[in-house]
Length: 403
Image (tube, rainbow, N blue to C red):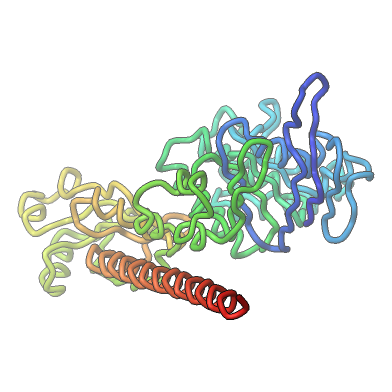
């Protein structure tokens, strides 16, 4: 995708809302627009599918100039997800997801298959959710359906305008992880607007930090922006704790996931005792009937159980997926009394655990990388200054010889 001199002027306004934006977005990458409120990032996004008509410039998608084609046809080729999902309240989940395929003339059987495929892709059981209405869904479920609708017609480009901004922090983390997983499977070209720099680091292959009128302050990888912000404006977005923010660049799948003894709620109490004794550990993980983490059980809990696990043990308060960042995992470990976090699959099923020692080793490695990069940067600066000084002295000597 290419944006060439993209500009938007509103009548009666002295300055353009978006001024001469030039950007190339590679196929299959996720690019994040981040910047202060009112800088024009959402306006720029909406010009790509011409929900807002550009005043000047060009937009090319796959080499095709889309500036002059029918905007309705364009929007059917570009997925669009917004904050609060934007679902039609009078339509069922199935009708919402199947809307664009139906408008483009797909057969009913194909639409039905695609709707079920999309629900499964975003982690919702088709048998449970097909006939529901948006009001019967949680905020996180609505956002998942919104993403499924945006992807239903298999568009090459997906535009996302602060799609997770209206949900609680825990749901937001899980939706971000879901988007990362989806992108690994689908390889769409995604342009995503947010004001949250941590979200930008977590999701983006590249980040465009935008000033007023969508002027690009820096357009680079998250690593490059964290380690070498272009100026004070960009540094303000990075904020303090750049090393900790880099934990958003590594995933749980990048570190060692270990296993621990598990039992289910249907396991007899004596068998749980035997499993705990045989494991040589002080605790065991109780799974529910869907194989999802439920409670941490310790020896003392079992002694007090008195034949029932109903009140025994400590509830698992948070879990992470393989696609969660190490920062998410660290927060989960710190809030869980066990000192470790359970790792789960697409439907919440238990996979393994990640512990504090593993995460702290990763933190130390990142801090060491930052220290070495800072030393290398300082050495490069000193080398440059030395070369400049030498050149100035040579110039002065040459001038003296001429005189």
